[in-house]
Image (cartoon, rainbow, N blue to C red; front, side, top):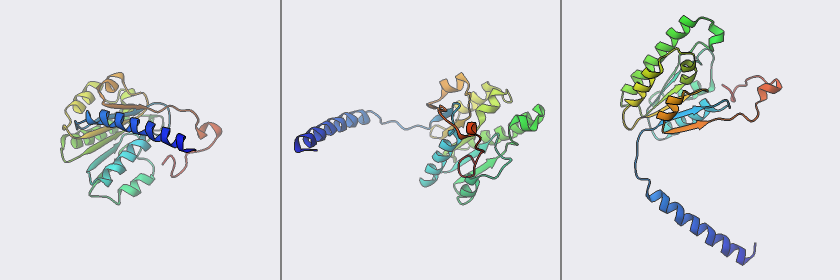
Amino acid sequence: MDEADEARHADKMRKKQAARETIMATKTREKGLLIVHTGKGKGKTSAALGMVVRAIGHGMKVGVVQFVKGAMTTGEKAVFDAFPGNVEFKPMGEGFTWNTQDRSRDIATTRTAWDEVKRMIADPSYDMVLADELNIVLRYDYLPLDEVLEVLSAKPEMQHVIVTGRNAPDALIEAADLVTDMTMVKHPFRSGVKAQAGIEF
C-alpha cells in the first residue's frame, strides 16, 4: 500500500470513527434486558452460556435453570461448579419429551423448573437468569404463555433474563429487547456425526 492509499484509508477510518462516536453518544440508558435465542440452528444454549461466563467475569450473580437438559453430564456444569458464589446451576429436565413419553410427568417437571426460574427472577440479587429451553416447553403447552410473559415483564429493572429454545412464541419475541434467530446452514448430525463432548455438551 503506497502513501496515498494509506492516507485515504486513515481518512476513511477517521470519518467512520467520528460517525460511530456520534451514534454512541446517544446511547446513555442502562436496563436489564430480556434476551431470546431461538431458531433451528445450533448455538442457542452455547451463546447464552457464553453470556453467563461473561457475567461471571464481571462478578455478577447468575441463575441457570435447564428445562430439558439434566439427564446427562455437561462440561458447563463442571465449569460453573468452580464458581459457587456466582452461579446457581440447575439442570432440572429429564431429557426430551420423546424420551419420557409421559406428558403429565413432563408438565410436573416443567412446573418445578419454572418455580425455580420465578424464584430467581423475583430475587433482585440475581443479575442474570437463564431459562434454557423454556421455548421448548412453551411449544408443548407445558406452561401457560400468559403466566410466563407476566413473570418476565415483572422482573427487576436491572436484571437480565435469557430464554433459549427453538420456536419462540411471537408474543415472547415481541416482548424481548434482543432476539437472535440461529439459522442452520450445515450440521454434522446430518452426515452421521453424533453429539460430542465439548461441542454439544
